[in-house]
Amino acid sequence: MSREELVAMTRSLVEHGAADTMEYADEIVRVPAASYTDPELYEREKRNIFRRLPLMVAPSCELPEPGDYKAMDICGVPLLLTRQRDGSVAAFLNMCTHRGNPVVSGTGNATRFMCGYHGWTFKNDGDLVGVASPKDFGAVDKAALCLKRFPSFESAGLIWATLDLDSKLPIENYLSGYDALLDAFGFKDWTLFSQRTLDGPNWKTAYDGYLDFYHLPVLHKETFGADFFNRANYFFWGPHQRLSSPSKFVQKTGSDEQLDLTQMSDEDLPPDALTQGVWTIFPHISIASFYGGGQRGAMISQLFPGETVGTSTTTQYYVMENQPETDEQVKSAHEQFDFLEVVVRDEDYATGKRQHEALQSGMMKEVLFGKNERGGQVFHQWVDKLTNASDEELLEIFSAEQKQAAE
Ligand code: FES
Ligand SMILES: [Fe+2]
Image (cartoon, rainbow, N blue to C red; front, side, top):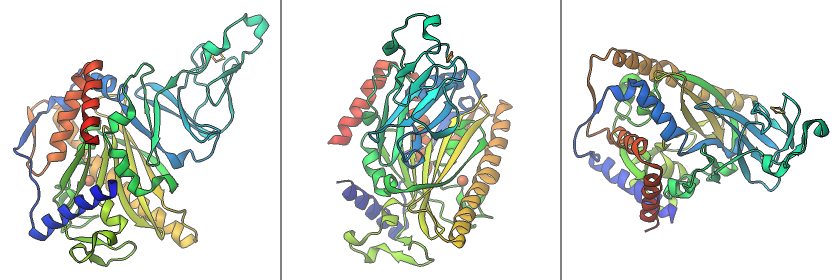
């Protein structure tokens, strides 16, 4: 089913490429400049988007083995992910139920966590198993003092969690069928090669850059080249979107050869042709395929708002189909990853920071998204809609999206 959908998208891209056309949005859209700089709106976005919607918190290959864990802080919420004995993932509020100290930090492998403050101990399934000096402390109902669990979901080799202990939003509904398409990458069998974290500008300023190809041959002329394509067609599943250039060619994996897709049957379309372009997961993920180190690879960029309205942090996960084996391959995978860091840090985010500072002057009232920048238009519409939706409306919005996806 999802392969059919991938093939249909590829055929549409090929047709547009052969005809030298692209799909346009209906009109040019104006977005208030203050939506990037208003600190109050920024706080509402953190609360209503990041602390209320499912977030892709880790690729599955970051926690491959039972006992693997990762602690992280997202918009002030301490989160602990653990891989259980049965292979499933659990997401907890990383706060000791005694007095709130995080029970662990960083990453590692453990079956138990002992809180570093007074020594209460929790299993990695959240159960409280030991109260230090229990007689002195007094009797407590241990079952009522387990780590608090967030809703979580694992699909397509990616892990989602919702940082709202009372959330009633099914994560499957939120994904609106998109995870079945993401499954085509095969991430559940891939491995994590390397990761790093970068500072960026306002989260929406940063994210805009993942949603258009318009800037590629200009901003990235030194790295990607000045004759790089600048057109994208967009495909949507709820608020999640893929952008891909209309073209009848795709580069053959591991070579410079261009495959002419008009000459290939649907069955022969390679995975690279089916998954090319940038796949975003609302509100903060971008996935793009690359080749380096003798393997198919992808960079998964995970963006979070920072301390202030003008800051964000991005973790880049470089995942690969297999770990590179020879020294040469390892070197070439590192080179590929380093290249992508330079592109994002020195070109996209350096520009985003300058753009944000200029917008902070308040001298400009609106910014523009052209008919060729439909991705940015749709992204900002979803941010508005979801920031302003009540909890009940949120459930309705995504139950309708899920229904539509199932049709
Ligand atoms: S806060 Fe964890 S044992 Fe006291
Ligand atoms: Fe860019």
